[in-house]
Length: 243
Image 1: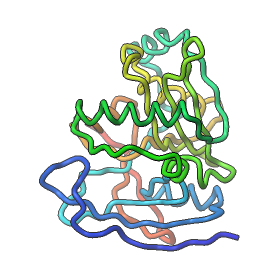
Image 2: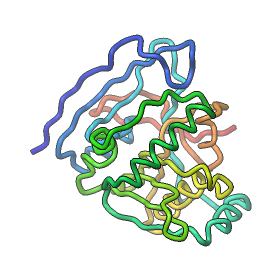
Image 3: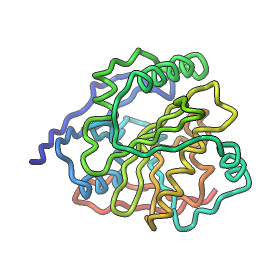
Image 4: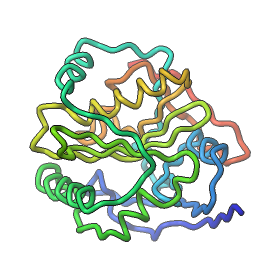
């Protein structure tokens, strides 16, 4: 049976992207979420981590923009093809989400490096927290991609396979293999999965224009932006983004 609880984050939490701003989120905690409800929430600007769905409601700031790529119009660029060519030795395994010591170690190592590289806030993640974020709540639509080179885990991506879209959840990787552009390769992998299944959209998460951590998502075109903040019973309005 589906169970849903709505709540809000504490006010005045520091923003993860701007040092001089604060974040405020609306949450739904949903057990036994259906694929159709997940898609309805994603279409309305929510993101999923485990059994939690959230959307920003920050006072005086609307920098986090929900975007989606139109899969049918997506064409591999020369740079995309170079990334794919660099990863000919990278194996891909798609399975249901799970935890292992190897994944947990890689997640924590990735965030340690991102703390020093980009100033991300880092606190070591426990096995329970990892399950809460990535393993719980996958229901009949959540999947995990493991990327390996010569048997070594070098990246892990999570995504939801919905009725007409793929929604990317999270990705982390081994910085020793940065030259392979694994973040881009993960997005391309999911876009090509969506294309092979004749899905309409790919949701990469929130986009902040020109931000050093979030601006890369505009490299995958064509894409649309959500221009309203609809309730679940209201239609979302998506518009083509033109630079």
